[in-house]
Length: 114
Image (cartoon, rainbow, N blue to C red):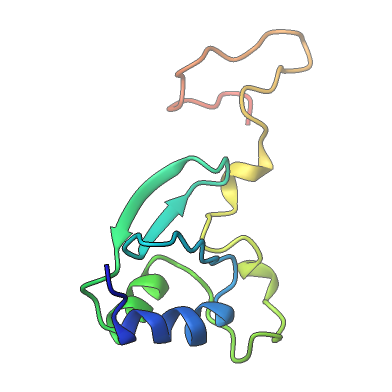
């Protein structure tokens, strides 16, 4: 599988600018963007081999990755966990409430104790 110059340019020049975007190079594999949740669960894979560098940049930014001006530029506070939405990390999953009752599993709609 030959890497297109477009993808190669993105990997070498653009990836260092994106916060929380890492390239894992697999020899012989077509380049894919693998999206992980905060728990490192695989959400989806997007093959990049047929895309231009511009398309990949647009895709990554639409996914919510923060693009820095330079690789060493500071990342604003609100983008520290980008592209992950910061909400899930505030509440540990199924934390026991203080009175010893644990919320029922699968009960995502109601939060009476919030």
